[in-house]
Amino acid sequence: MVSGLLTAAGPDPASAEFELAEGTYEVLVDETSPAYLGGLADVVAAAGRVLPLLADAYRTGAGVPYAAYGPDGVSAQSALNRPSFVNAMVSGWLPQLPDVLTRLRDEADPARVADLACGTGWAGIELAKAFPHITVDGLDNDEASIARGRQYAADHGVADRVDLEVTDLADESAGWSPRYDWCSSSSACTTSRGRSRYCGTLAPHCGRAVRCWSWTSGQPRASPRPVN
Image (tube, rainbow, N blue to C red):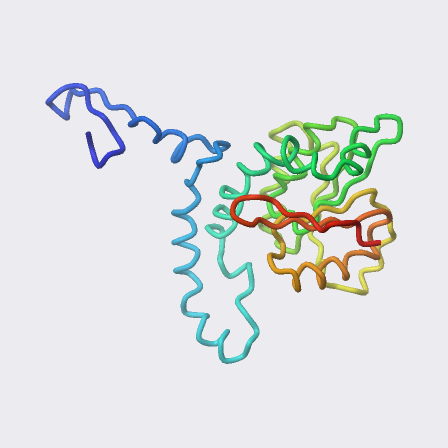
């Protein structure tokens, strides 16, 4: 056994055959496993990148812009969020919203969905794979995340129905029309006050419903009813 991660068949490291110890593959290699933590290494790198900016952020209250975390920040966010979307979004979260699930299943009148603060687009990609007739617009203000998400959508064969665009969701003068059947935001805000302000800003852009997701003890929590 090497550091609890590898097992070696044979006494001579030069000729021994190595394999991952039981349970290690899911945590370090399988990128869609619920146990996957491969993105944590990127978290450390991204946090180290912005440490020099924290002093000014505390002094001014301006915060640290997401782009300052660099490509490691994008990778970490993407890697750590993806397993939840792959394993829980369609099978576990949407059944808690029966009205939304019914709308997404309607093939006669295909829904148009907005994935707000979409990051690299994994939520929209999984929705498009599960409901082959819908279209998804993924909106985020981070150019690097959008660029990477477009490639992921192409890799998964849904680029014709998942459109990812750089958009500042905080811009109240954006002038969108209420063109979406469902607006979903996964983990963009994690407090009740944050959800209320966030959904209030987004409501005019969504014709039928805004639902904000957050996680509590590993479980998703949705706003109790649409914000219209």
